[in-house]
Image (cartoon, rainbow, N blue to C red; front, side, top):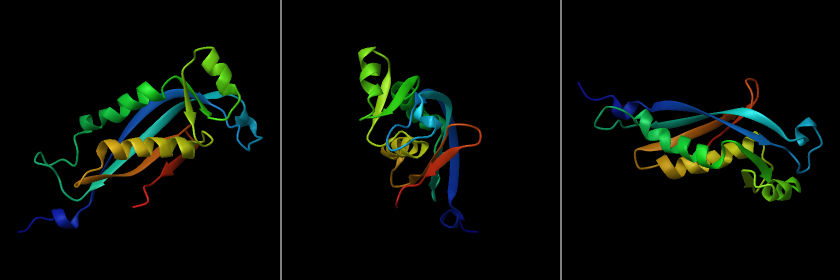
Length: 147
């Protein structure tokens, strides 16, 4: 009997968390215009059609570089749009920050993490399917690569 490998698409997910504040300043007038924090929840989904020599799509431990990057770059930072006037104060007071090209919405933070995940994991056998970023237990964004 032949292998079903060509007929099956495998998908796995790994979840990470980080703590960060943000505020929505660019063209926004709602309550999230105030600086506020979240316990962010990130899900990375990887998919592919061929398992490795250990019969895994990818070892879950091999996804840890994304968590390390999140910890080094985003964890316990204030995430602000690069033109937000609050950024000057954050820099001046020597606090950790991450400046974004767009408003630091869940959608944009997911885009940023997606780009890093694709850089780390995409190869001939596996691809990042999506990144989901939740800023609360009821609200989040999921982004997919174009291809």
